[in-house]
Length: 177
Image (cartoon, rainbow, N blue to C red; front, side, top):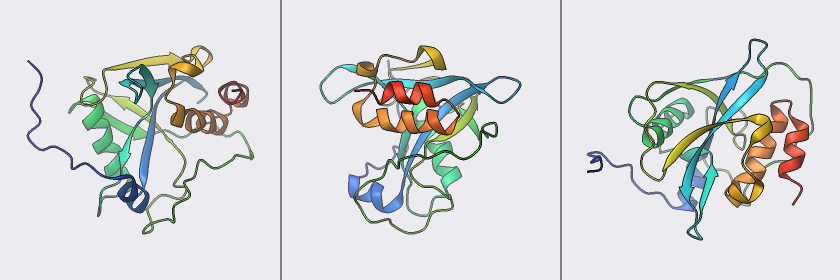
């Protein structure tokens, strides 16, 4: 018997997400130097009915801070015991990155400085995928799922994330096709 959600999150339209902001969260594990070692992805049923990997995410709700949106998205996707803390990458110097923007005007200002970047979050607690997430898995950065196994819209998001983390070679592999 599945878990019953007593306080479901209201569904939001794409226009609401564009107005309120969208949160993309990439759970991470780092080594002692701060270098990215692994990323966590959730498996969902994609629009074509196939299982694919994607980031944790969702809309920022009206009146919600960015940190609150991250925490809510983690709990809604990975269970009520999931908790997260923003993870700082090791210093890698300036890089040029293309934006993963939308052709929609920005909504009200957010408390985050760069709205189109996925957030690296170190997670803890008992993880119990729920909602759209069928499964959660850690992937060593050199052994990410094949490109065709990642949700199409999240490929550039993950590529930009990897590049920002100092993994430009891995980012280029995701952008090949």
